[in-house]
Length: 274
Image (cartoon, rainbow, N blue to C red; front, top):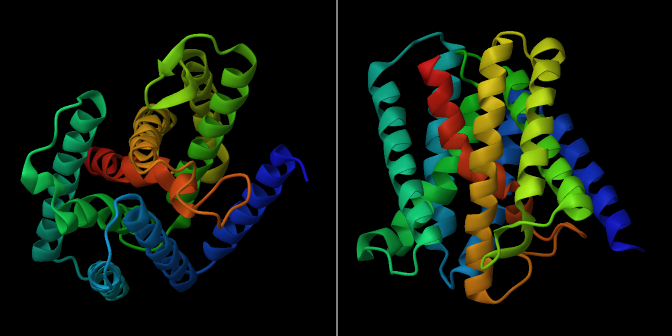
């Protein structure tokens, strides 16, 4: 089977499973947890980290935030200490992401604390899946339309960045990290992502205004692309093409979710600001 056909079929299966999981709060929480565990495994292989402790840490931290959010929302009980805890996680996650960006654009080694195995894992991988879950519960109850809209924008951005870049790309975006990415591809993905924001606002989630969905599209396109580049650097340092083999034509779950993994704290921050 051609590589392009494999990519389309596995992408459709992934999309179908994800959309089906949105039907109930529990199924979405479980699928997000499963994706997180798989991503933990793939990330550990990329960074040469071993041990069951990472899986235990992810399970405990994710379950705590998910269960507490579910419990408080079910009882309609706002809780200031839990909101403060989420804000602290958000600040630390964004702080670590900035150092990952610094590492992307610099050949110098990171300060030792930011390469500590658990520190980077908790505030890059674990927290991202927590924010994916929290975005779907942002309104104080489970509402999958927001996270569905975000994933649609990511799929549109990635698809058209690939299509435009393949057919019209000439200027390399970041050749040393990802030789196939082009400026034209990035701009094409951004353009169609912004166009799709209007459709998402109209047909998927009208609780957020069209201008705010447009802003979200820009955030998703920019930070999603940066997330893709950061994961590409991890793969280049590990001398591997893909983070895994679970999705033919795409690679691993980490390859498929690298955009939302990096962008999710920024999406959540923007939702808080509006």
